[in-house]
Amino acid sequence: MEDYFGKEAGELKRKKLWLLDMDGTVYEEERLFDATPGFLQAIEEIGGHFIFVTNNSSKSVKDYVKKVRRMGLNVGEDAFFTSAQATVLVLQKQYPGAVVYCQGTESLLRELKDAGIRVTDRVEKVDVVLVGFDLELTMEKLRNTCEILTRQDPVYLATNPDLVYPVSFGFIPDCGSMCVMIRNATGKVPTVIGKPEPLMVNVVREKRGISAEETVIVGDRLYTDIATGQNAGITSVCVLSGEATLADIENGTVKPTYTFQDVGAIRDVLMG
Image 1: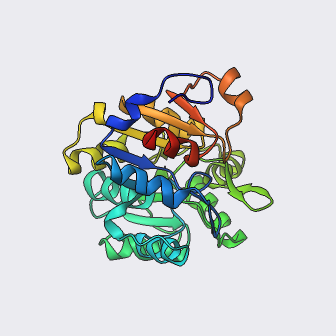
Image 2: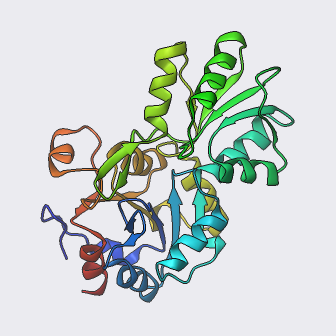
C-alpha cells in the first residue's frame, strides 16, 4: 500500500472525510474518469464520506449536480462545496449589504442573488468587485471591472487563484489568469477566497464534526489543492491526472503527503 514514490499510505484507510477536487481529479470537462465510480465506492466501503470541493465558480451547486448525474454519479447538493458558496459566506459575514459588481457567469450571479447579495451591472457606487472563473467573459465585462477598480476604491475579491482550467486539448485561462490581465491594466490585486485558503476545508469539516486528523484532500494542483492541505493542517494527496507533474512535485516547494497516478491508484490502496 504505497504511493507513487514508495511511501506507505495505509493511513488513508482511516480517513473519514475526503475532500475531492473535481476538474482534473475525478473528471475532465464532460468525461468522467473510468476509475472515479470505484474510487468513490471504496471511500464509502471504508466508512468514509466524500465532498466535492471545487474552486470552479462558473457553475452553481445545482448545475454541478446535473453535470455529474449526466456522467452517472448519483449524488445530491450536499455532496458539493464550491468557491462560490464560500464567497457568499464571506460577503454575508464581512460585507453585509454591499453592492457587488461580479465578473462571472450567469450561474454565479444567480447564486449570489439567491443568497440575498446585492448584485449590480452598473459601474457607479460599487462596494465590492468580484471576479470569478467566467466562461462567458466579454470585453464589456473586463472594461467595467477595470473602470470600477480605477475610478473607485472598492473591495476587490476573486473566487479562486487557478491560472488554468483543464480541457480535452490541454488548458484554458482560469480566474487567476483573468486577474493577471486586470492587474496589468489597473495595478490592483484581489483577495482570494477559495483554495489555497483553508476556509472551504474548515467549513465542511466543522459542519460534519470531523477532526483534521481524519480529513484528507485530493487534487491535481499543488498551489491550490495541496497548499490548502498544508494551510488547513490536513493530509493531502496529489494525483497526476490533471495539472501537476512529477517534475512540479520534485522541484516545487509545496509537497503533497502522498502522490498517486490517479484516483484509481488511491482506490487500490483503500481496497488492498
